[in-house]
Amino acid sequence: MLSKIVEETLRDYPGAPVDAQVFKDEIASARSHTLELIRRHLTEFGEYFPAETCVQGYYPLTDNVEWTTSFWTGQLWLAWEMSGDEPFRALAERHVRSFGLRIAGRSDTNTHDLGFLYTLSCVASWRLTGNRDARAFALLAAEVLLERFHHKAQIIQAWGDLRDPEQAGRMIIDCNMNLPLLYWATEQTGDRRFADAAQAHVRQAAKYLIREDASTFHTYYMDIDTGAPRYGNTQQGYADDSCWSRGQAWGIYGFLLSFIYTGDRQMVALSKRLANYFLNRLPEDAVCHWDLALVGTDALRDSSSAAIAVCGLLELVKHLPVTDPDRERYQQWAMRIMSSLNKHYLAGKNEATNGLLKHSVYHLASNKGVDECCSWGDYFYVEALMRFSQSWKLYW
Ligand code: GLY
Image 1: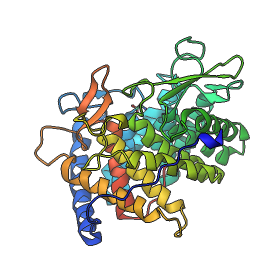
Image 2: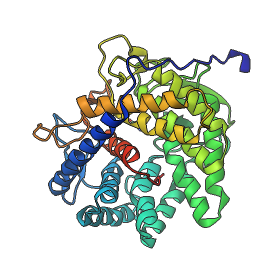
Image 3: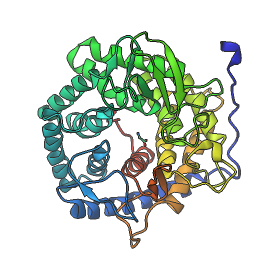
């Protein structure tokens, strides 16, 4: 099995290195501009949440439904940490109550995305302010997430009813980002069930979602009755055997999040392999196409994958020894991608949008969120800004 593994050597970024001082100034200016935009969105969104993506430049406003509402709450926490401005915190705390009602009423909670939802809202609140209600809501969400664990298959099912023939036993690469909620629940309670499930899942993800060349399947089906592996395919990528850019970015970052809680260095090695595959397939402006198989074409970009990858790369750099030959290159790539996002993708003050990061693709095949801002792209862009501008303790 091992002999089939194809390792890619990370290519150098083309052109001159990003100048450290120029980059620092660029980040400082992007940070104050972004804070101003978030301040404006706070007034505009009020008690509502932005939908998953913009429609013709503007987020429709929703109640606390779907998988993405916490990306707005997460931006509020980041903005509060960056600025100390009380209105950001006050609104984030109101969101926490909304997340409490949502989990208590089990409203739209039939999804693995409880990790995204409760980490960036309630775990963040607990970590930053010690809000005990937020802690309780997040622990309840971890219990509900645990219900999605298939013992025979050793995976957390992504979507839908656990016996739905279309979805049963389907794991997806995105789920790596949902595992921190489970590890955190074990840390808080001492109850190993949460972390054991997360660890079992991430091992299956490493085994089946990553191909021999370090590209990834978006989704993979396991047999829930026998535990046997079935097949991989895609939901949002170009083809079953292509490499959906956002999946790869979720993988770069997500495997590291498991490393942080488990200390399993194999996760760092996997993150590196995925990063090399990703970085070796970037177009000239360093912001990926929506599927990595489409490099060299004029396919649309997915800026949200780029922002996720920047956060993943910066996390990766933290966990590599200074002697690692690629460490400096990961740092340079992260700066280069970020610089491109700052210059060409960040919404201007007077642009017709209430998003931050333009040009992402949610799901091309169903024409959802195509070439629009999306809520997770906005969140990870702000997280990347935070990581570049001050030392930051993860919410994950
Ligand atoms: N987790 C769904 C997506 O990345 O589109």
